[in-house]
Amino acid sequence: MTINWQAEAEKYQDDLLKDLFELLKINSERDVEHKTDAAPLGPGPAKALQAMLALGERDGFKTLNVDNVAGRIEYGAGEEIFGLFGHMDVVPAGPGWVTDPFEPVIKDGKLYARGSADDKGPSIAAYYALRLIKDLGLPVNKKIHFIIGTDEESAWVGINRYLEVEPAPDFGFSPDAEFPIINGEKGIATFAVHFKPIAAKPAGLTLRSFKSGLRVNMVPQTATAEIEGSFPDALIAALESFGPDHGVQIESTTEGNRMTITLTGKGAHAQEPKAGVNAATYLATLLAPFDFDPAGHRYLTTLADLMHDDSRGHKLGINYTDKVMGDLTASADLLTFSQDGEQSIMVNVRYPQGTDADTIRDQIETAVGADAADVSVLGHAQVPHYVPVDDPLVQTLLGVYTKQTGNPGHEVVIGGGTYGRIIERGVAFGAQMPDQENVMHQANEYMPVADIIKSVAIYAEAISELVK
Ligand code: ZN
Ligand code: ZN
Image 1 (cartoon, protein in one colour):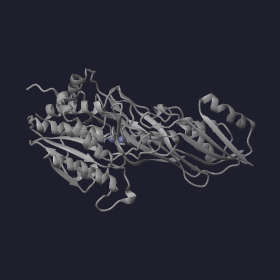
Image 2 (tube, helix red, strand yellow):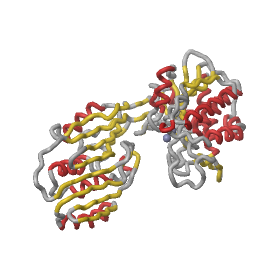
Image 3 (spheres, helix red, strand yellow):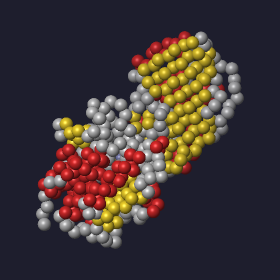
Image 4 (cartoon, helix red, strand yellow):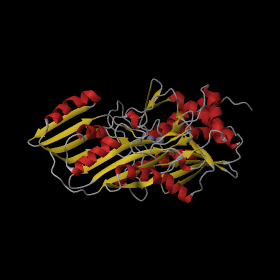
């Protein structure tokens, strides 16, 4: 039987949009302040999960709800389990929306709503692919488990709970990224550098405090230092010239012998620190040449000498490149210094296969000096994940993608983390098209309706190939 996948997918457009609108109207951001026993991550994630499972029930699939934090829609029978991994939670709407983020609207063929591209739109595309396979009665010789998480944007509570109590699929993909594919994801670890006490000594300037960064996975946009002492002319001159010289903004206010300096760079996701301008390391570079107290001097020079303008970690001695997975990246993202309190730097590292978190920890400690600081891994490291390009899973997905779009298929390794890494033979596949701007997590998030329908067609053929 020859199937026109695109034509079959188009038949579902009205039904699909109606279901998707229902899901998008639910604000399903993590909201543990309002958690209940029936909604452990807050009311929204549980409600969206139940709505998704209700679609499965309606259409005659078997469904399972795991503690209202994860779920499954099931089809087919066989020895092996093929998995699909989507999520029903969203990141907070945030400011800057032209329309109501939870009142979906279609303008110029684009569906605007929080979650349209990440991940309710792609998830519903994968779901309708299953419906298409079922409605056409195509051969299915494996169990298909469509697994739905509700905490992908935070701590993965839902999916982790699911895997504690339900079997992991043998292979599968997550429709929560982009085409052509993501078959490799670097390891992710955050290293906490905590400085040890140091003997005081008179100096011209004292670093009272230094603060920068919001999250361990974001390059800091602003940094603020409070300094005290008598300010040399060279510092006053540097405050004038440093901004224009380095393309950053500097503001300072002075009150008697105290000065507060704020530097603004550019925030970015830590998976590619080069996309940002790290406000903390720039501010440290501006201040480090001056005569600071020992603790302040050590803190500023560590940042300026070992972490500034060095996204590949050469100065820390952690640089590493794998010919398939690419470069290790490093980013000083969360910085806290007070003269009498905590003095720490959190360094977020994305590393390819061939090195590991313990090795990197040792290397950072050697660079900073074991006398100066303790270095530890914050939480637990996520190890690198890679499914070889010649794996039949990858080959099948790329083949279908190329056949249906005419675009070349090739392997892609990223520094981020998707549900693709949950199982050994897991990848991320779509649904963002290569010519499409990435609007996930942004205000006015949208997904072109045509891309949702195209994804149904691609997913249906790909799943059908993999389970026949
Ligand atoms: Zn997502
Ligand atoms: Zn996301």
